[in-house]
Image 1 (cartoon, rainbow, N blue to C red):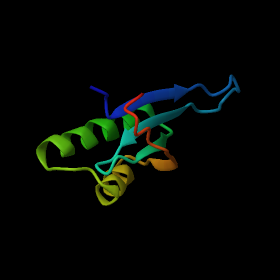
Image 2 (tube, rainbow, N blue to C red; image 1 turned 90 degrees about the vertical axis):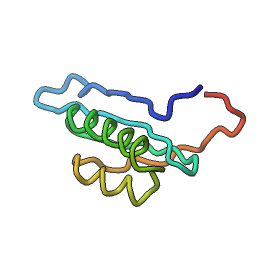
Image 3 (cartoon, one colour; image 1 turned 120 degrees about the vertical axis):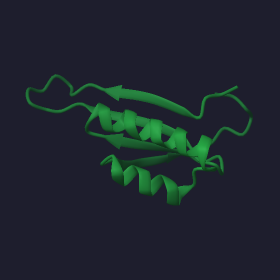
Image 4 (cartoon, rainbow, N blue to C red; image 1 turned 30 degrees about the vertical axis):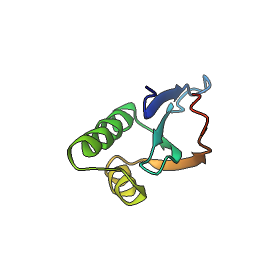
Length: 89
C-alpha cells in the first residue's frame, strides 16, 4: 500500500544565515497530490500529524480542511503534483 504523504527537506544551500526549507507532499481525498512548504521542521511535522489525525478521526482531507490546517502551521502551497493513476509510486 502506498503512503499518502512523503516528507522531504532541502538544505539552505550552505548560505550563512539562510534558513532551511521543508516540504510535505500530501495526497488529498480526491487523489490530488500537493506539495506544501514550511520554514520550520516542527511546523511541517505538526501539519503532517494533524492531517493524518483528521483523516483517521473525522474523515477525508479535502482542500478546505487542508487550507485550515495549513494556516495553523504557517505553511504554504508549493504546487500540485499530477497523480499517477497506474498505481506506480
